[in-house]
Structures are given as C-alpha cells and as structure tokens.
Length: 268
Image (cartoon, rainbow, N blue to C red):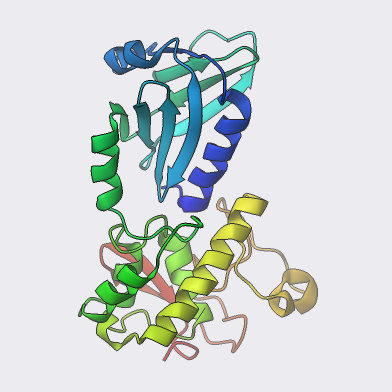
C-alpha cells in the first residue's frame, strides 16, 4: 500500500496538471458512473492529501475521495486520450492531459460534511504543515499497544506506513514492542520530527531513503540495496542481513498483523 509521501506527490502532480480547469470525468468501467456524472464539467479548485487519502476538490463543494489501498494505481499522459485498458474506475480529461485510476479501495464523491467526518477519523499527518502532533502523542501515552502498532494506526498518525514505522523506530533506537504509555512527550517530539523529515524527503525524492550519510553505499563501500521498493533502509526487508551500524543480523517477526523488522542489539 502506498505510504503518505506517495499520496502527497500525487496531489501535487494532479494539481499541476488539472487545477483551475474544467474537467471531463467518466467511468469506463462503470462502477463510478454516478460519481463521475456529479462532477464532470466542473472546475477543479484544488487537490489535497491527508494521510493515505487523496481529495480532488471541485466547484460546488463536491470532492472526489480516493484511497488507493493495496491495488490502486494512477496513470496519466498528454492528450490524445488512449482507449481504456483494463478496469478504469475513473478517467479525468483536461485540456492538455488525461488521468486514469484503476483498482482503488475507495473512489467516491463526498460533500464537506462527509470530508469533515473523514478527517476526524485520522490522526495528524506529518506531511501537513497544519498538523498538530499533540493529540497523537497524548493518545500514544495512554495506550498499552506497542509503539509500532500505534504508528501504523491511521487514527493516530495518518500516512505512516510499514516502511516508515520500521525505520523511524530503528533510527530512534527504540524497541518496536515498547508500550505507548512508556513514550514520553520529549521522545514523541523526537519521533515526530524524524518521521516528518523522512517523509518530506520521500516526497522530494519519490522514494524512501532512511539511512544517514555515513551509512550510504558510497560511504560504506557496499553494494546498493536491490528491492522493488527502492531506497536505502536500515531494517525493512533486510532479515538476516547485518545491521549497518552494529553488524547484528536484522530480525523479522509478526506484530499487529504486519511484518516487523528490527535490530536486536540497536533496539534492545
């Protein structure tokens, strides 16, 4: 599932291509036909990312809400519009570009009240400048759940996914199983600041890199990581490989229904 930095990149891309223009919206697949009919021909005022949720705000207080989930993908290109290939849930056509959406978990039209309810279910998004990490920290401090699980809970931190949760805890030297109630305010502030910095770098680079300069392949004279997710990381999907800091074999195990990766020595 795409992490929050990907959704923010998509919001920026779609704003660049379509904001301020009247758009034709259709559903070649048919499953979004009613929603497409409600917004087609309207001016796209702006786009917005909140955690893993993407919003296209149209005139008339209607917004298209997209959650990509595990299988959703966008594709875009310059006109002319190609024939639909596969199950295209939503097709957007502007005066210079087209946009196709396939396989999302959610693609729906929402009014302002429904958007407010959506936002109220989400925690603070580290990539939003209006984010307030205070309530998220307060929620963590009264929880007995592992901090790893709390970071993945979108009602606590919106946009943080599996890679960032594993990596930010390694960088903090924090055991992923630490109960939230043991995370003090200062430690939460440090976690938040590091997560925000990493995710902002992800937006800028288009990939997730979490290693410090002294641990890059160039600095350590090691081969670059080869993985479909790309990027240089400390523990994510590196089970059995030596920790880049201490050499201990990276461990892997299940937690909160997800794959947890950690260094038994650095995160003891």
